[in-house]
Length: 327
Image (cartoon, rainbow, N blue to C red):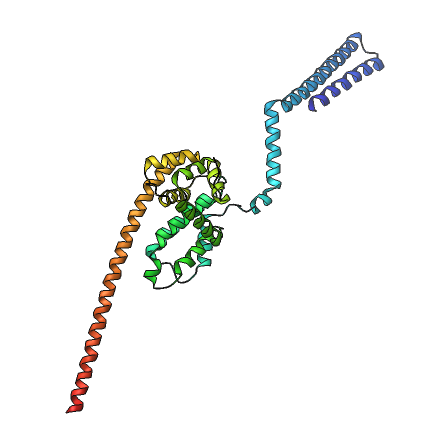
């Protein structure tokens, strides 16, 4: 703009010189000088116009090029993010967190508190099951239900004996299922159906059902066998599978587990890894039950000794009273 203004000013000055020369009767050199000024002004003006057009073409090329496009997209994205910032900040995470599940459990089972020696194992089991369920690949099935029930019963089997209450472990299980958005009645019914199926069906027939030739007569079991190949294979399904093998009389070892997982069309490495953990946990639970049994025997002996001591004391008092009455 400054250059254009300067060019126009030079043109005006040149014309003024020409007029002054004409009006004042100046010499030919003055007119020649004026025409020189005018020519320079015109040339500079034309050069300025060409430069402006080139600048415009360069700007358009920059905007159409990759850098200009990126700049435009970035600017647009920034504006969209700024405008939708309030909406993004107000969005809630649709996936439940572990803390949500644990808080729900304690709301469902507030009192009496879970015994400390069981609490850590229960929370760990709940956490692992939660992480399996919230996975997008997970699909609930009856074998998973059997594994969850089997693991829970192994973990909490002696709970009622220690607490002296009736049905405490069942209440905890109901709260456990509800915290994980599962129906306790359905989980129990599905688990019992698979357990009964395993006891009533020969191993060879179960393997053919796993392969789908033919499918298992119970649709819940057939769906579990056919669907696990395309869904998430978790620890609870492994435990359910081991329970089925035990129920039909198959030794649960690495070779047999590999054969059965092959029939299910799943990778055997996860199942064999779960097998080692399963056996370790069974040994720990067995040792825990033996310890609980020893504690029970010891407590019964102490109770019998206290009762005997109390009976002797009462007998001695009675004898003293009788002696006093005779005297």
